[in-house]
Every structure is written in C-alpha cells, then in structure tokens.
Length: 393
Length: 222
Image (cartoon, rainbow over all chains, first blue to last red; front, side):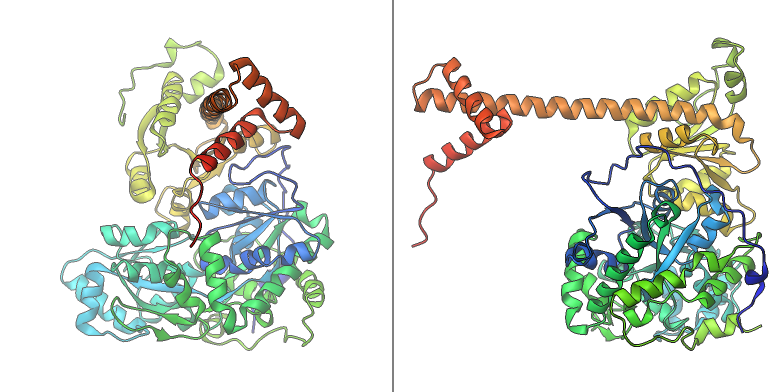
C-alpha cells in the first residue's frame, strides 16, 4: 500500500514569491507569447519540442515561447519567480519546491507525466576495468557491482565517485535503491556528486568521476566518445518509472484554461511519439532544437528503443528505454508518495507536503479529454520493481 | 586572484555604515567563466572588505573549493551550469556545508527582480545570517548589471559600425553605377528607406547584395 502519511498531514504553508515586474531572461526571444516554457536540453524534453515543432500549441491558439536552461536550479528559479510559466521538471522537484528545499519555495502544479524511463548508468575508467574482471553482463546486477567494489576497496582504492544530475531526482533515488539492493552503502561505499548532464562525458574522460546516471543522450554520447560503457538503464531498476513532469507555477495557474490547453497539446505530442514510425522524426526535432552538439544518430538510438552499450558493439534492442505515450501521461499520486518517501529516507524532506495539491489529476483529466484520450486509463497502473518494493511497508 | 591578501580593512572605507562592518571578512568564492566580470565583482567586494577566496570557472573543482576554502558566500551567474552541483552539496551529504540560494530578502520583490535581471545567483552557507550577506549580493548585482550594460553598449556600437560601413558601400555603388554625387547617393538611399518603411542599413544591404548578384550572375544550371 501507498503510505498515507503525506495525505494526512496538514497542507504546507506555501509562500509564493512575489512576481517582480519585467523579469528578463537572456534566453527568451522576446515577442508576444501566451506561455513561456523552459526546458533542460535532454532527449526527454521531446513532447514539448514536438508540440512546438508540429504546431500543436498553435493549433490550440497558444503562442508558446520555448527557452533552454543551463541547469535545473536556473530553471526552477525562473519558474518560481515568474520569468517562465511552465517546464518539464524532474519528478521530485515540485515536492522540493513546496518544502522550500535549496532555498526557493514555490507552489508548482504537475499536470502530466511527460515520460517514463530514459536514464542510463554509465561506468568508466578503473571502475569499468574492475568490473570486466568479474562480469560483462547487461544489465549489470547490483551484487556484481558490489563484488567489484569490494575488490577495489581491498586493493586500497578510495570509494568511486558517481554523478547524478540533481539532488532531487529519480536518478539519485533509483541509483541509491539499486546500490542498496546489492549491499552497497550509497553514503559510504561510493561518493555521489552532482554535475550537469552535458558535462558528464568529459568529466568521465578526465577521471573526475568514475560513472554517472543521466538521461539520454548523455549515456549514448559517453559510449560514442569511448569514455564509458552503459551498464544498465533506469527501467531495469523500476520499469516505467516516472521521469519528467510537466509543471506550471501558480501565476500560470491563474488561467487554468490556458494550462489545460498547453497540457492537451503536449499529450497530443506524446501520441505522435508513441507511434514507432515517428521515432526518427522526433529524434531530428530534438537534435535540432535542443542538442545541436550531439550527432543525430546518437540521439536517435533511444528514440528507436535501442542502445549501443559499448563502443564498436552492435546496438541492442531495449523497447521503452525512452517512453512517451498518452497512456502513461497521468500524474499518479502514488508516484508522488514514492518520491516523498525517498526524500524523507535520505533526510532531505522534513516538513509535511500536501502532495494532492501538487499532483493535479483534475487538470490532467481535462487536458486528456481535450486531447481526445478516449480509453479510460487506470488510475494506478500496476507497479512493479523498485516501486512495489519501496512502497510496501 | 585567489587568496588575495586581506589588506583592505573596513577602516579604509566609508567607515561606520552597518553594511561595511557586516560584510568585512566574509569569505567569498566567485564562480564565473567570464574573467573580466569576475575581476569587477572581486574588486567591488574586496573594496567592501570581503576576502575573495578564489575564482573558479567551472563546476569540476567547485565542491572541494567550497569545503576547503571555509567559504561563507558563493556568487555565480544565474545560468551557470555549476549551480546544480553547488545546491546539491548539503542535500547529498549531511557532513558537507549546505549552500542555500539567496535572492536577497524574499520580502523584497525589487531585489529579487534586480538579481534575476542582472543574472546573479548567490549562495549563503547555511548557518550564516542572510542579513550579513545582503550587501555582498548588492555589490555583485551592481557589478553584473554594469557589465551587462557595457556589453549591450559594445554590441550596439558594433552594429552601428557595420551599418555605417554598409551604407558607405551602398553609396559607393550608386555613385559609380549611377554617376551620382555622394549627397545624391545618400538621398537616394534615404528616399528608398522612407518609401518602404525600412532602415537605411537594410536598404543599403539590399543594394550591396543586388550589386554583387548583378556583377556575378549565378551560372545557369545547364
């Protein structure tokens, strides 16, 4: 069962920051826009990019301005202080924002689950060498990883450094869960750090880190640059885990109809993405709009449900490695409870948070209806993997 | 500029204001890949009596520098990719210093607006009173804003220069191809611009482009 603690807690007092007049963002091309949406350049920003590129926002009468953010912190600040209206966010970010973690308190509303899966664990350097002695299996098991770590430790090597992309991220919680399953203490046996995704392949090459967990295309990019090997995908830890959420700030929520229309356009874009024959087109849109420095064939791999885990090896099929589909777009409150529980377990979250006020199922329902989602979608898709194990008391 | 000597005591400055006293000897780390701007901010803060622990351009070494430099405040670009690493220090490791992002006083929307406008994000290490840090942020915002204005000015100057060149070339073309005087050529350009509601430089650009096309006609395909 889902823990009910958060539900019973009184709603947190959310102090919404005053929106200063005339906030500027250097990244935003000025011009009249109804909605200013930000994104961190990653493959799974694709529903937003496709909605813009295919005119799905425009078809709903919305003039949308898209702008890239250099970091999750910068994206959050622009959302919190009203420079932007909405964005794809890491699923735990709205919970962190409601609790004021990191210094910025903001009321964000989640209107859809943007994507499932999409992250890879990449190892390089010495750590990979230690593994090759023991195993080359894919996906790597946590116990095999633990064995390799133990061997390293007894040889006098310091704990390896693994990077995730943000403290409040599925990357952090899923990696911790996987490590713990193998008997690895995530706080003692490895050192977790945070680096922005585009910096990861280089950091791995330079030896600053020994591995990382990040969204595509950065795993595939590291393999292409011959600096690491993909040892597992996040779907191996929790199949179909929620990854990015579409979130809006409370200023945007003042006009619910607009938020619903934008969400409907994004759900339509997911319909386009759910069609395998559109994979190449989607990859092209993302590469052009968000990832101009990454070769298109590297970006295209995950969109085609494929990964090259090691340089010079043929691609393997991994359906759903990057999944966007209207049928998976419902923001499920059980997921919010899972993330809140992980945040508490890590000592990050102390105060109670009213999760039902953040995960706006009602807005999703209106948007999904507008997007013509005819088949009703089960409110709680049967969870498995990490979800079930962690949520069970 | 790292480890600059702390020679600038508060006594040297408009002695006595609360801000000056409060800011003195705060240890500040700058994260900026723009050396010129970083120098301007560092000078401004040193003048307030801050100790500039160092300037780092990128995230790689950042966490170690914060930990080992006994840093009180980190000042960085709002869009610095280093910010996520900085924010996650205390969140990932309970034994690390915990930098908390600070948009000055949250009850003061003008300050937040000014900081975002100037593109400044400041982090105060948890435990330190935000009031002590306010003037550090004010200095950083002022220096960032000045740098931004200078950049805008430079860009405008560059555009003006290239526009002037274009107009000169267009005038030259008209003078030689239409045997106009310089004044006639300029009047012709200005007349065209006014007729079409376009900028003089745009019309000049069209003239130059057209002339190049007529002089080097594209070869027919076959």
